Structures are given as C-alpha cells and as structure tokens.
Image (cartoon, rainbow, N blue to C red; front, side, top):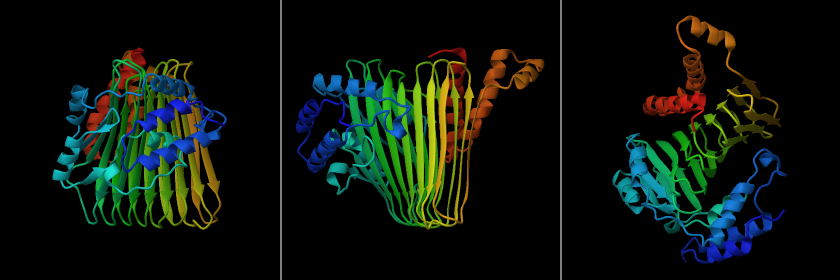
Length: 426
C-alpha cells in the first residue's frame, strides 16, 4: 500500500538536504518509501497503533516548508537532564548533532564521529527506517575499542523544542563495540513546548565477541508530542546485553526493540516499564531472533495505566532451526487504575528447534482490594495505599536497571509520575 505521506512534498524537502556523503542514501530511502509506504493498521505488527496522526502532522510540516528549530533552543532542559545523571553526554537537538558535545566525548576517550564522515550501510527493511534516512541531517557513529572499559556511561540525549510551529525530526546513532569491550549507555528522550511534534529515532548496536553492554532508555517527552523509536541489537559470541526502558511521557509512542542473537553463548536481558495517563498511547514491540545456540534471553515488561489511556505490548521470540540450547523467557504484567484504560498484550513464541527451554505469559489486573484494606487498617488513607501498591509494582523493573547508580534517581522520577497518574494530573 502506498504511503499517505505526500511524496512530492517529501521529495522537495529531501532535495534541500545537504549535498554530502548521505545524499545517495537519502535518495534510495525516498524511493523505498515511495515503493513500500509507511506501516498501517493492516500490518499485523501495527494493528493496534494507527500512525494517521503522525502522517498528518508530517504532511503539515512539509507543507509549511519542513523547517526545524535551531539546535540550541532548549538549553535549560538540556542542563536539567545532563546534570541528573553522571555521564559523557552526546546531544542531538531538533535533529541536529551538537558538535561541542562530540568534542567533549572525544576528550573523554570515546571514539565518536559524524555519520556523514563515516562509512555506513543502511537497512531499509525496518519500518520507518527509510523516512529516518531520507530526512536525516546527520547522525553519530560510536566505536568502543577492544579491551575498553569506560569510567562513565555514554549519554545520548535526543531533545526537541516545539514551541512555535509543528515539527518533525529524525535522529540516528550507530554504535559498535569491539571484542572484549565494555560500556554503559543512557538513551534519554525529552522535549518541550506545546506545538505538535513527531520524532523518529533509530539506534543500532553491534556487540563483538565477549562484549558487555548495560543500556538504559528513558522517554519523558511532552504529552503533546509523538515518537517512533527503534533499537536494533546484534549479539556476537559470548556477548552480554542488559537493557531497561522507561516510558513516562508522550502522546503516541511506539518502541521497537529488535535483537539478533548471532553468536553462541550470548545473553540478553531486556525489561521495561510504561506509565500511561489520559490520552496517552504507548506501544512496545520486542523481537528476539535466536539464530544460534546455546544462548539465553529474559524479558519482563510492566505497565500501569490510568484514565483513558491505551498501551500495547507485543513480545516475540523466534528460535530458528539449529538454535539448540536456547533458553528464553518473556513475561508481561499490567495494572489498570481505571476501567477506561486498555491494554493489548500479545506474547509470541515461534520455535523451530528441538532442544530448547522457552516460556511466556502475561497478566492484567487491578489493585488488590484486600491489600488496600490492610494498608488502611495500618493508618494509610486510600490515596496513600494506592501509591504504595503501584510503586511496589513498578519498583520491580526499577530494580532491574543495569546501571545501578541510576536506580535511586529513576525511582524518584517514577514515583513522581505515578503520583500524577493516581491524582489524575497530566
């Protein structure tokens, strides 16, 4: 099906992009988008998430001239985020790479360069990847050399300012870890302003043999803003990937986590917490392809939904033929604080090997009235009881944060967000 995007207007916007080493890739992506279109609810993986509002917003942005806000227009929010977590921060603001942050990262011993200065190949098979490349001003390439152990996490801040007009931004980061290296990453998404905005981000992470990665993603965008986000991960022999994601803000949010296990002995643990209030739509799709064995994967996602909100969790595990020795588990638990909240949960297993150990499950429920009553007999009022129970439910995921120095701060952020959900404050 053809894309609902106005291709002629998109073609004009691409023609105005810089003439650099990304030019050929932009044109190829534009052609692929014209041929394939964007996902619709007719696609199985998108049946619960309708991108019509994002397409309409993009068309309006194109009609207005496809302009983006200057990259330094939200320094206060940047300072607030980067001062909260001790990391070497790289910043992509309004789709533009902050060159000063590259220089600081290089001084800290991190191998980082602009995507346009690097030799990179692009994958056009992932949904919305072609839109990302077609309108990409530039991106980042990071390389962690063999035997490296960084003293601080690498922070990647995606921030957009939409205070005056409709905005659309694309951001992309390519990360490679050489064999026997180790690094931690913080991926943070923020935005400000009440004008409509759509951000489309892609991050690819390639772990060499015996590489180790701890990765935390926090999405805390303004509730008027939408985002599609993809993290692609390739795991080499005996590599370890530990990931934890927190979705707090946004209007329409779609996250795709795609993990390819290509080396025996690899291990992946990936967990997430999504908190949705009135009018929010948060969709988490995870897919892990066990292509070789033995290998291990564990995932647990939890959601807390209030008022008129809707969330989606789809976890797919595919054990390919020959991937004997695979050990995979996935679970999803959801807490509904309102009879108007909706969750669409779908755990999936596809197994084409014999010697495997796989399990999956999901639960959906409300607060335990007996537990609330017990707390009230101990002196807590109803509101305090609800807050205590929801925090305990969410804390399970917070405690899985692989960068332990972040756990206390994230716990406070989650507690504040839960208090707003319970109070009905947005």
